[in-house]
Length: 111
Image (cartoon, rainbow, N blue to C red; front, top):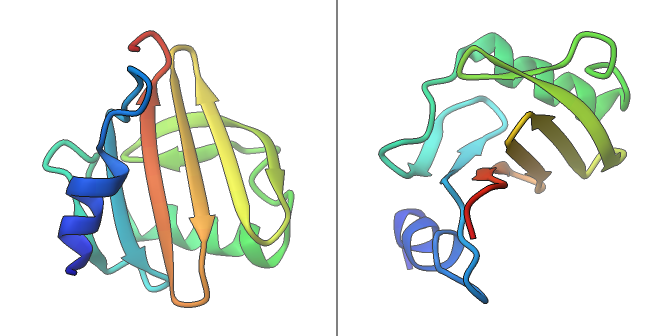
């Protein structure tokens, strides 16, 4: 199975009427392995900030999490493993693996 089919068939699938808005899988270096067409174009420094927060949990809390130029308030997470962000009706989640990151964005108004 390719990373793209994992994004398309697993991350973007509908479960109990809920689905994600967009998703991506990328390496710790910020290189995209797979993504939905509508995943925001992010900057290298945004992913560098994410990686710094995984290494030093709480680093993004004062300044916020940026993805695709959009600022998210950092909320509850798991140090070194999960970063959660929220912006009005959008929520995002970033999971760290040994070799990559799994990111998603969800419109909380959509079922």
